[in-house]
Structure formats: structure tokens, C-alpha cells
Image (cartoon, rainbow, N blue to C red; front, side, top):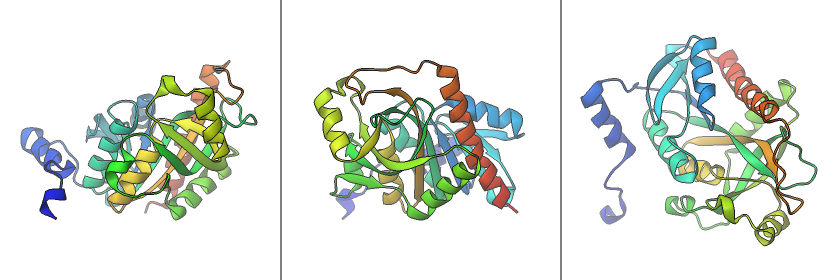
Length: 251
């Protein structure tokens, strides 16, 4: 019904930007969406990417023009920012979006720096319900997830595969909430993944995601990482593995 259609769409915003600045790219084939903007800057330097307008400032384009690969960051932290990014990247033509973010470890066997590929995410944020679906989880695209697992395994990152718990309330991750999430099979807690999967599915795009464990909460107390730079190195290695796999496929 007409009443259910959004008044404002990502395509409207992109067209407005074109009229104002003419700097929005016309097409992107695949996008690596990262929760750390330094990865975007590094892609521009190391991979000789070109910067164009994107959802949160510059998006870096690498690869052949016929199958352009974008590297972008959301315009902030959390599910709403991730949803804005996915909407706008889809409007730019992205058919596949891989999200790489940070997460808290819930499974006691996970250590800081471990990589988890997300199969699905418990929807306890406020965005995914706006994009349809009635289930308790948002699921990743199976083909994109298999490709992501392969790329990270080939890079020697030893990824696990499992469920995330996505929440909006960083400071309300209580012992009882953590217990419920673990009982539902969640290995990690994050702020974006369920929204990324839900928005992409609603727009007919494939999405997959991986998170790097930073802090840990599974013991019932907060355990920050002892070596934050080591966690960041694992994040960068995960992003590099995705880009290397995609660039190897590009003509």
C-alpha cells in the first residue's frame, strides 16, 4: 500500500547529493562495511583506492571499474547507523555487503582477538523489526557466509561460526540478559549485525558478517582485552582477507 512506502529513501538522498556535489559514485558491486574507519583510510593508501562520497564521508573504491569494490564505515555506532549505511550502499548498487565489527565474547572459550562469522543474530535492537520478519533472529545470506568463512580460513584466522546477540543497550548487558542470550546459543554480543542482515534482506541484497572479540562478559564480569592493539591487528587482518578474496575474483 502507498501508506506503507517510505517518504524518504536512500535513493532520494543520493540523488540530492549528486545535485549538490556530483560526487556520489554510480555503482559499487560489493562492499566491505567496517566498524573501524582506519581500515577505510588504509585501503586508500595501501590499495591505491580512490575516495568518493559515501554513507559516512569517504568510501574508498578498489578493484576494476566494471566490478568496483567499496570499503566504507557506518556514520556512527550501533544499529541505526549500520542501517543507514546498508540502505545507501544498496542504493549505489551493492549486491553483497560484508560487515566486520567488534563484539563482546559470551562463550567462555572465546578469547580477545578471536574471529566469529555470524550465522544469525538475536534481534534485540530496534531497527530490524522495522524491516519486516517476525522471528527472533536475523539470518545471514548462506552463500556469502560460506565465501566469508572460506576467505578467513584461507587467511589462517581460524574463524568460528555461530550466533550473535545484537542489542542497543551497551550498558544494560546484565548477567540475566547474558544468560538468556547464551541459552539461546549466542557466542557474542554486538550492536549492529542483526540490523545489517535485516536491512540487506529487505532490500534483496546478500549480507554476511564477522566480528572480532574485544572484551568478554561470559564469566559474569567485564574482562577488557589485555592487548587492544592485538585485537585491532586481527580486525585489520580480517578486513584484508575479505578484500584479498574479492580482488582475486575481479577481472
